[in-house]
Image 1 (cartoon, helix red, strand yellow):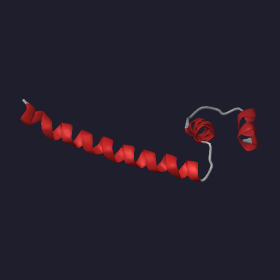
Image 2 (cartoon, one colour):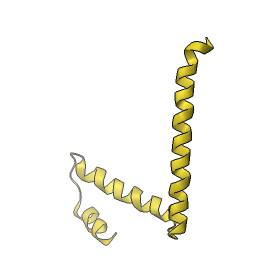
Image 3 (cartoon, one colour):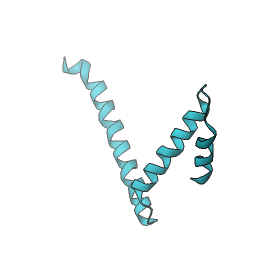
Image 4 (spheres, helix red, strand yellow):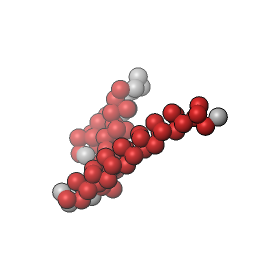
Amino acid sequence: MFRLASPILFKAIKVYGISSILYDSLIGMLQAMEIDSLALTYALAVEGMFFLMKSAHIEVPVWVEAIQDLV
């Protein structure tokens, strides 16, 4: 049983380890540049919302486009 699960488990541990190292280095870089990571996350979320609204096949109101120009 363990012989079958070990390749999957070891790959998951490798991916988790690599992603945690990259995450720590990214957060350290943002802190060194004195960028607020929470504000950056909110800004990316708002821009992502605008991108999704424009790429969707729905009619985007004019006021939404005006808000995007202000942000």
